[in-house]
Length: 370
Ligand SMILES: *Cc1c(COP(=O)(O)O)cnc(C)c1O
Image (cartoon, rainbow, N blue to C red):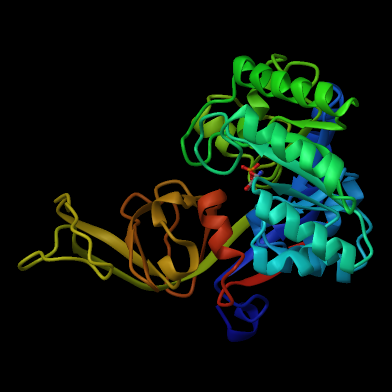
């Protein structure tokens, strides 16, 4: 391969198909809409890349959402008109930025709500909040109904610059808890207690994230749930088919493709030679002895993507066997192609690798569009 050919792209890189992303977001939005559910499109799964966020606006999601204010600030600065939602409960130290760059936020602490009130008052704005309810996944959210209603009444009656938009939950993040119709009903019951106390309907009851989509797909979502915060299913579209046995044939799972360059190719032993201690990250491993094998090194490593086993080789017979900070070790003994030094090898990406890859300054980004 000549140098000029190689220079078309710099490696490693992500090739990002904006058309496929827009189609995924639009398909996800349509799926939710049919059941009366609005979609907050979450952009943190690709570190808020602006060209991707613009596709969310084109697809017409109700909110563009992220856990990081930096990403929402960039969205606002870009002139994107879709309202923004901050989905990580706020640090007290960021509420001034919050009311500037987010139209809405998730909250679960009285102290933060009071700080938001102060910041919104100073900025002469009304900031919308959704109170989080912990239904057992054990991350953010009010734990008791008393705490939840106390906060709701505080916002409703005593915080004039904070508007209570609704309540929501998050499942399947820390505690790996499944979204079930029972969990959703519990959330709706709590919303209805609040509605009684404040004497009006809440605009939103938020049923969660991608992990709540099986209820929508299987038509088991109770009708009062009317907001979901969706990232992964629209971006990578791999978690539901791979972990929940729920194929999503109407979505593209190759919006992001990782390309890396081969820098070594040799026949080597498959079991290390000498006393085995720990790897570059201080971990102990078992190494299977498969005899002498054709192996290749790709110039990309854990620093760029986290866990090598979360990458998906796109070529038959290419197997990932490990990685260090800057090298990925491949077994290519059974590769269908005669892989050479300087060749480019492609991998599919999922949430766990995509969040790192899109955040690495060493991984270039190239956009394609139909
Ligand atoms: C990350 C996150 C989401 C989006 O999750 P996906 O799995 O990408 O759909 C939604 N809500 C909250 C609170 C989050 O932190």
